[in-house]
Length: 59
Image (cartoon, helix red, strand yellow):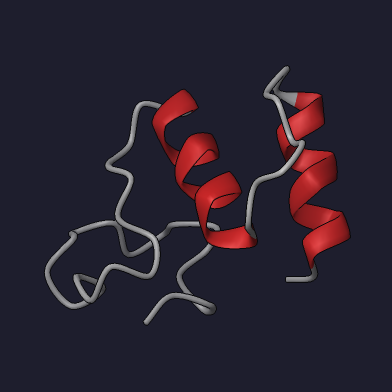
């Protein structure tokens, strides 16, 4: 997913998007959804969030 799309999702959820990198934005979105903020933290295999919106991008 491109940064512009991530920013729009964050804005739609009322989150601040300025000066944040893509990974930080995604983690903020994850927290706002009540999920673990595990995006791109090398825990994709063990996070247990198989239906996560960010799963395809996660490492």
